[in-house]
Amino acid sequence: MTRIFTQLSLLIFWLTVLVNSASACPTCKEGFGNASVEAYGWSIIFMMSMPYTILTFFAIYVLYNVRKSRIARGQHALTPDQCLLELAKQKAALGIPTQPPTDA
Image 1 (tube, rainbow, N blue to C red):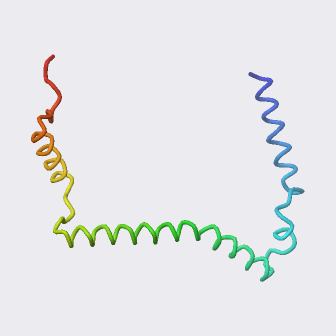
Image 2: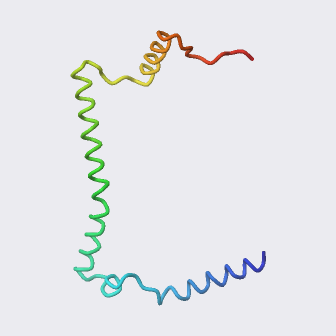
Image 3: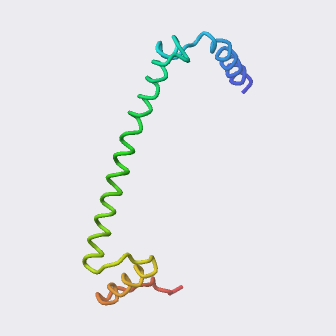
């Protein structure tokens, strides 16, 4: 246990000593505060956020169209209790028990 602790302590020490000599990518290393470097950083953030933005708008579009078609057919959104009641009615019509047996 002491050997692992010693090795871990040395590793943490060397990482903290060498962190000053470690650098980021060359673009970031050359110029914090440079306008082109900041623009480059913003473009990376923009590119990384685009898939999530597109997926969000697609999901909203699908949800909107599903709700719109349900309203057109007269099927309004049900509450969870109404969904369970509807499911219990369908199961009862098919002869499927809606509750587990209570035999102990």
